[in-house]
Image (cartoon, rainbow, N blue to C red; front, side, top):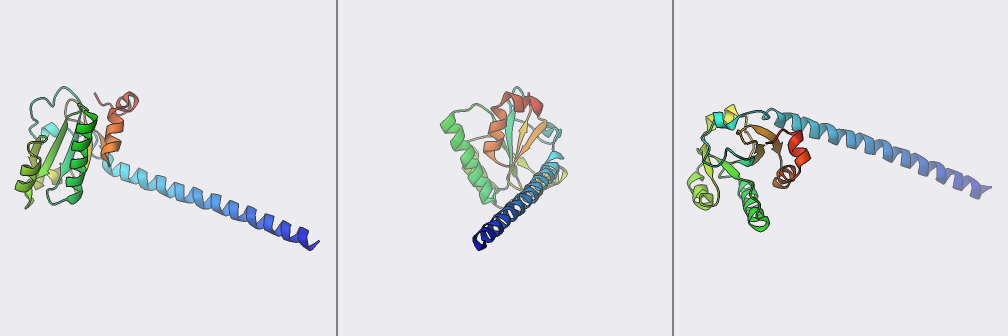
Amino acid sequence: MVFTLIISLATFLFILQLYSYLECKKAVTHFADQFVSMTFLKLKTFLGVNLRSYFPFPAGFSQVPAIVMFASPSCDVCHLELEKILTQKRIADFSIPILCFVEREDRNYDNFIQEFGNKLPLIPADKETLVKLQISSFPSLFIIDSNGVIRYPGHFFKEILSVLQDRRKMARYHIQ
């Protein structure tokens, strides 16, 4: 009798714990989804912006989509992300153009240009233009279409690359 009571109590407590876990998991998942949605909505304000209206583009950036990075020379993460992008480009030998807009007023601007200037196109970006574009965090990564219009805001290079390597995603985001 006592054994049956203990087993029943243990089963009840187990079911209660399982139910509590599942409810908590739903709440955490919902919170994470909301957070990601809010972050994407913030980034979504960039969608449709034509960067050609703000910057001169180098020759050869009009025929295909490209990866765009906004970087600050004082940003260590920008240096690391750019090195990662260049290494991946070298290893995988992908042909997707990469363009980097660099904050011109930064005290390390000249060093940044010396370090990366011969590795990819760098375009100076003044603070006023960055404010107009609402670029407030570095690095900021985007995919632009062949016309220079921002079609996809991304957080990481791998995410950006996965979109460019998937025809369905490219169609979904109108990347041509």
